[in-house]
Length: 92
View 1 (cartoon, rainbow, N blue to C red):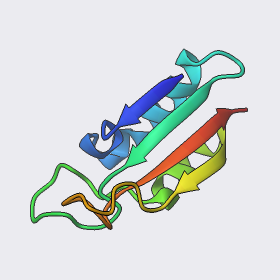
View 2 (cartoon, helix red, strand yellow):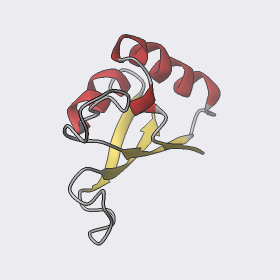
View 3 (cartoon, rainbow, N blue to C red):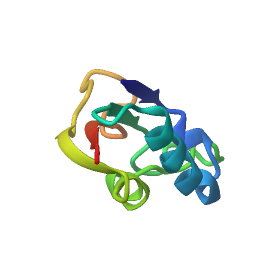
View 4 (tube, rainbow, N blue to C red):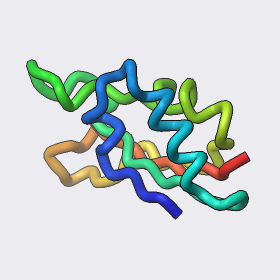
């Protein structure tokens, strides 16, 4: 199990495919990757964090993982409400 809690959004988008390949390499054959996707839309005027949409994750994780679940609203009372979601990915 790997839990990515906002690491992805700190990476320059040009490095995301390498990140996805490394996650697949580190996990066992039946491994699970849990991602807290943040920010799913522009959060502030400077980067990082880089916008990280569910589609951004699917694009780079798709060759290595299958998405098995997603929760769109993680913490509705948080200042980050509306800017994050949570997904579970099964290694292929």
